[in-house]
Image 1 (cartoon, protein in one colour):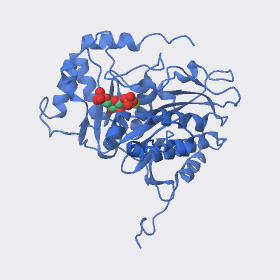
Image 2: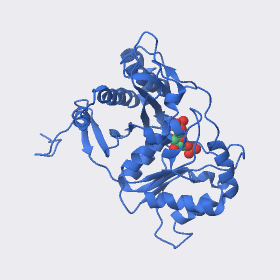
Image 3: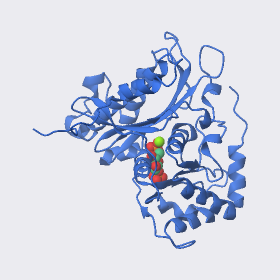
Image 4: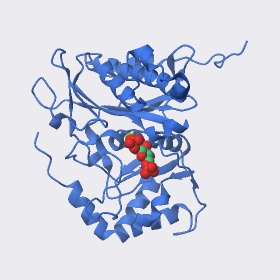
Length: 361
Ligand code: AHM
Ligand code: MG
């Protein structure tokens, strides 16, 4: 018989790990613990659906219809609804916000509310699903700040520095969930046989030296001078001529980020001046950048918009975009230096966007 687990090693489920973390907060009510556990459960359901995605053409549907009563919905919508329905009735949240929806998602009036706000990108990199390449889910949790019973935009539009937890799931050869509550970063791998996430990567810290850079440099002609110089520095061409980092780009940020977190490296999606009134790049501050910035910082790395720390940005819009440089601290700081030296016009245009007033609540 094969032994799937190393003899003598400790088996820790995600539930047990979250409960153990809770003990470090003596006054904790357990609400937050259960919220994290529900995200793990949502991850299992989405993983189950993504592994069958390729069968849609053969079976006529993704089989989602049978299991969950949905009619031929694509996986983005399925993932979005799974997370919402898992969390709308638990009395733990005052509001949710999803990359898939323009507006804040209210908790239905028939359910009670709680003191947390959940933000999520249900299926990051979903264009990769059709070709059977890894995708992921990103989530972030803020604490409610306003007094009313229901959540408002003000509760959601908080800087990443205020996050109480963040995490992601990757749906690849294995499904993994990685999360932080500000006490290190911990990774769990789903054993599909028993349906449990088991602790496989405790206390992740991003290794030095970095091995990889990940960017869509098919877009290089649109990039600013500073970002191009940075790319050439990563390649060992510009600067002191160090050994080049290898290039890896999946086009699913979660998967690219996950590899770089475990192996060392930088992911970047810069702003550019292709449209001078839109100098901010592609990634979303609230649904993608904040969560991964919190995680990378907890793992000893750093996330920047090319000017300063992502976690310090005061958001002004739910779907605000942000240039993103994410990975080993020193490697990200070098991007900031190139931009500071070479991209004065871009920086002024971008900061004008970043510093807009918060929209009325
Ligand atoms: P999505 O959330 O709509 O899937 O978009 C985000 C994705 C990231 O996962 C990925 O890194 C990026 O978009 C890829 O963009 P591009 O095709 O421009 O390289
Ligand atoms: Mg995304």
